[in-house]
Image: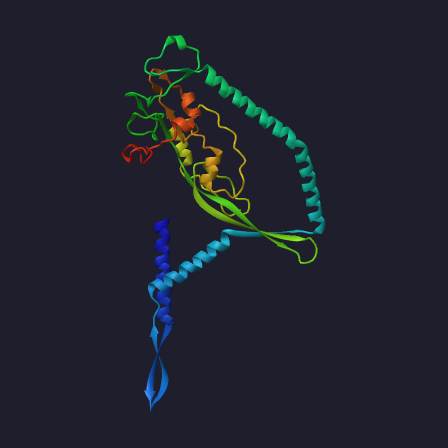
Length: 325
């Protein structure tokens, strides 16, 4: 599409230049000089014709296309709230404030109670935990006890790859604890910006909301319709083919989390936590992970992400497939 658009721009620019040459429409440039006649400075203006260049014509065409695109990707709505409307809003906010005053002590009591429980758990761990000096030599006497040890996570010579399919890496990785695949799709997002203007007389207020379209990559999959832009829609591209090639998921997808509007796509994906167990994404955890003589289950590795998933490395490019068979 980018190459086709560039060709269109070049053809349009050539057409503009050709029209200007045939009609004789030329840009005029003036050169101002000063000469001295009989000890009097006299200013002279010399004019010459300069034809439009290919770059000038292309810039004019591009500016026209940009203005047209801005008009198409921008919608403005204006709402009016008079004095009576503002009074109702103020009354509603007052009622909400009174409710929060009544509920706040209960929430504070519950929060302090959780803090006390956490302190008790920490005190229990300090008093009951058994310190293991050498994690390579676990003792059967400590089976079922809370133990504390320090060591290095290892998977020995075990290899790791994703589920079989066209999207899987071409060769398993060695010494990998976790491997994941994240797929992104280029989509359109509707964003809004509000501008409020208060009335000079009374408490009325006029709010102008401008809706624009932003395009960006997102790992959240194909997005829905754009409510304020019925003529624009999101394309699914090859997303369905990627889901098919990566295979069905055995885990039920988690419900979507309601996020604040106007968030960047990548930030929204971070807050919503992309479900890597759903196709076409993928994740795999080594079953041979251990610290010394103590094994590490997949649940521990996936739960304690700050401990076991804080250092990521890119998979070598030669192992990543560049097409779907």
